[in-house]
Figure 1: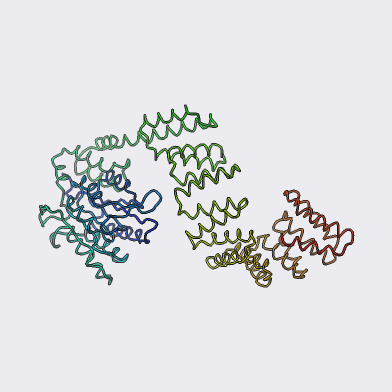
Figure 2: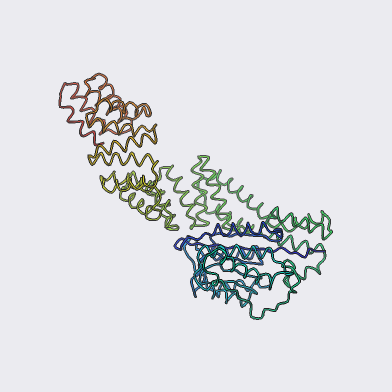
Length: 592
């Protein structure tokens, strides 16, 4: 005999679009799951979660999972509908009529819909024309009240006993949930409302337990043969292409109760999973052929692309799955430093789906390595077109512009800061770019903001020190650089910059010590050698000073910095000729 405690499947849908207030959705889902897990009937509930749902995700989730209860957590919009998300994470309104139309197609198995969102009463009324029970909210509900209601509802649902509890399981759980808000000491217990289907007939005997309240669609299972009953259950579990450990545990109990053989059970499972296994095998074969094509062609011809399109059609492969394959392959090739093939894989992914910002970003990164700067910029701009509120995209694009176009770099850094003002790195990089434009007032403001957000960001302390130095605030400049060294004691640049400031103050002994530390940590720092040479000459250590300047000239020429090398050669010439005015030339070098 089949167990009289059928599985109740709960589908939780969450949406918190970017431009809406932040909700504690993860806490709500976690506590609901915990409440079900701790109940004695935990094995009779299966919980599935879909986060940041778009309208199409809702349809697919319901089709694939076939839930008995749908729980939506998010935002409502009074009379207009519920707010889901679009491809960019922004709000996408779905009307009450649209939701009612979708859920009505599943009325035979869908027992209850919970809309844990502000202003969702009108949507609840519309959906209740088709579904037995629908819960909505008649006003805005606070985060705490919404959380207490949801957790209380499922706690009660999982523990309902008709021998002692009033009303149906849904009604009992609803009343307990409203009381949970009161017990928590927050307002809002009158905001949740329970709507019933107009022609709802109370057909379930009060002596039945909640687990015995089986819908008409489930009742016909009793008349099926044991094998067909097991087949139906397996197909229900295998709708997503796999059977979880919990589902296998439940199926093993079914096998015993139905008294079917292990061979019969295995054959049924194999048959149910076969289409999904064949699909995965086709994906693997597609990937194998794609890799073979990559190894033979540096650029795909139209004929090659047509062949792969035919493969996709023949094997009925979904574009979103191919998009994932191309991206995963591109990432693997990138990690293996096979950048040309990685570029080709990412470009094929873009042909499949031009609206995936991650693909454009990844392609941009590989193009940067190939020194294709303008192409990389174009890919990042595409990523930003798709995801304009992604601060990291603006930040990385600013980094690309930093060495070629400071105005564009500053523009992108400011966009990043505007989107995520609490990121210390963003303020620090903006400060660096502003310093490069000699805009020291704004640069100092950004550096100080970065330090406020992250006091241990050594680079911000160092940048602040040099900006203060350029404003001749030497005391604070030295303090900032000493703090940078305290945080990051092996950074040659901090020692070099501190040394040059001390040299400008005439503190030659301290300057020499700091500049030697800089060279110790970076033996190829041409500027550290130059400043050390100047300091040693000022200490009348002419031989040592000249030696350091010659090293600086060599390193600068090696790095292609011919103008700076020429300036030091002029100073060196003055020194060798015994011209005591050589120090006048050094002042220009201190502005490097």
